[in-house]
Every structure is written in structure tokens, then in C-alpha cells.
Length: 318
Image 1 (cartoon, helix red, strand yellow):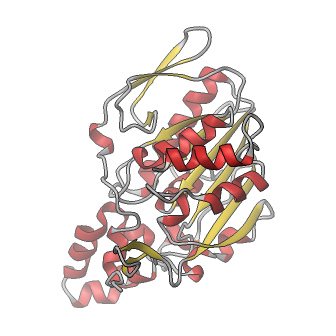
Image 2 (image 1 turned 120 degrees about the vertical axis):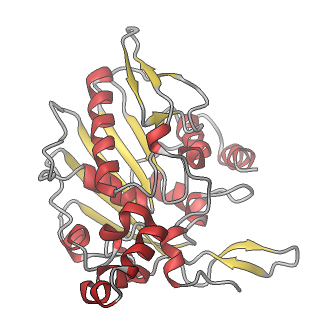
């Protein structure tokens, strides 16, 4: 069994192709009245393959936020699952090596734009892994640069999955000032090379982790899905032997007192691998789907029988 070696886990939260936020094409989003906005960070979970999207007015909007080393395309199938239940979803794209704070700024801009254009009944943000850090940071009331949610009557629901709110243990040395001094800054360069601009944010001793901020009063709930990733497998050979395990974050990296003490937080623990929990070809995320249904995030399937719905999910994740 292959296990991620120490600090390399920072650079490999989920193994997909990453896009660069700074060079993403623009997307036009239209509402029912033909009004439109132009954005750089929202797409159809197709890595900006479609440049004009439509969102219905006065209807819930689900924003899907991918994890590290991923792109919005990693959530394309989950987007289709929501749409199969009559819900509209859209992807938020960012470069995982950019500062989490900066990516959170872009998400705030995106939320404000969607609200102004469509006046949704609710905005639900579903975020995986590092995306959970980005999403929660966007929704705090005391943002450091005063870029906040503006003029929003819409309530917001946050759903995070496998997010390291207690910091990434493998990056601990990135928070050791004495070590940086002793190595004449060499460790800073290493941390920067591996984790990009996030290196000073994701270590357990960082201000970002220790003081995550208070969620805005606009947030009505934070469904926090934590994954017990021990003894899980990401890839197997033809004989069923595990070639690469799916352990990235321990549970104590996901539970964090500064986040969990908020009365709006609902902690749920699932036995699932880090990538497995959100699904991959050949492996629909049945456990996650059931959890989202049970908590009212994903609507129950009413147009298909149980067997037909399972067949649909197997086709989508083929």
C-alpha cells in the first residue's frame, strides 16, 4: 500500500488537474429576464467549456467548490446529480496555490453577483477539502479586507466535506519561525514551492487556522462532513489489491474547536476515503448522496424509483 509521504500531502489533497484562476476565461451568466453578469470564477463545472450559462430567478443556487489540485470539472457529475433532482448548481473555480484569503475574496464577489442577478431563495455552498477553507473564509463577518457579502437578504447554507479546519499536520514546520531563521529561510522556500501562497495559512499554528473568524449572520447552517479516511483505498489493481490509499487528513485535522463551537455547525462523520467520498468513475458517492438527502441539501428523488435512481447514478459515474 502506498501512503502519501509527509508534506507531499499538502500538494495533493485531491489528485485532479488544476486550473489557474488568474487566466480563466470569462463566463456570462443570464437570468430569466435576459439580464446578465460577466464573471471569471463561475462556470458549469466543465472547466469553462461553456461560456454562457443560465440561472433561474428566485430559486436556490448551489455553488460547488472543488479541493486542492482539482478543477470545477471534478464536480461535473455531482452537478448533474443535483440537476436530476430539479436543483440548479454552478461551479466556483480557483487556483489551489493562490492564497486562500484571495480565493475567498473571489467567492464573495461571485456570491454577490449571483444574488444581485437572480435573487435566489437560498444559496448553498458545497465545498470539498481545501475548498471548505475557501468557502468558510468567504462567509465570515469580520473579513480582513472589508470585502463582504453585500445587500443579501438570501440565507446561505454551508456544506463542507473533508476540510482540514484544524490545519494540515504535515505542514507544521511551515509555522516554525525559529526553523525558518535557523535555515536562513530555506524552509520558507520549500513551503512556498510545495504549497504556493497557502503555505502560511494551512499550518496548524497559523492565524488563519487559530482565528478562523465568526460566520456571518446570513449563514443559517454549516453542515460539516468529516471523513474517517483510515484503511481506505483510492486505486486498486485487477486482483483487488490497494495500489494507493485514500488517506489524506486524519479526523483531528478536520475537527477544530474554533470552528465547531458555532451553534450552527452540525458535525457528521463518515467512513470514506478523501477522494472516494465525492465519487469517481465507477464509484458513485452513495454515502455522501444519502447524507445530503437526509440533511435536506439534495432533494429526494421523486421522479424515479429507487432502482432507476441507482441506475442513473451508475450511468453518471460510469
